[in-house]
Length: 226
Image (tube, rainbow, N blue to C red):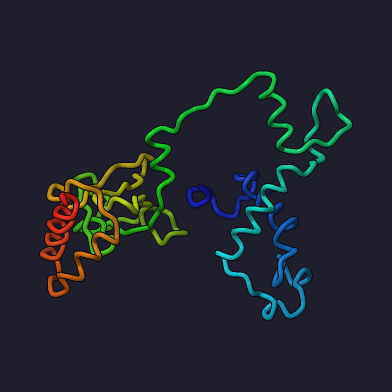
């Protein structure tokens, strides 16, 4: 989202900025190696203390998020008990207990937005990902053109399914996402992931270029049929 907003305009995404601020003040500053937002908040010898990788931070962050939802917040007040600071969990439960809720299933577009994103160029051959070429006539006016997102080097937002390499989706200038098929998709009728592709590649190391892509298509088709 922030990649498509005006730069240096924190008021355009106040909720996001407030969330970052909360994580910084209530979680990050208690970790070893915390550098702070400026030199005045920087700890001593932070380089020696910085010992957490992103993967190792996942568990304490998840635990903090659970605790955060059960922590009273001064800005959360129930009309029946205005003098008592409530927790996010209680404030969510109060109207649900009175009015209930309607679960809304995710649409196909919602699932598409949740897929991993890669930023790719669109050239005269199409979009290249992991030695596979994706192409469609809709890419015509986009070939060799920048996306207009300077923060991503002018590349285009492409969503892909790690468990099915037969197609990707590119976000067009109008904001809509369009499916772009692998050029050999007609030869592969079953989904395949990187493990399937590499199993076949180990047997075809001498094949390169478009011939290699054709061999991968045939190989993944054979694996799927088995």
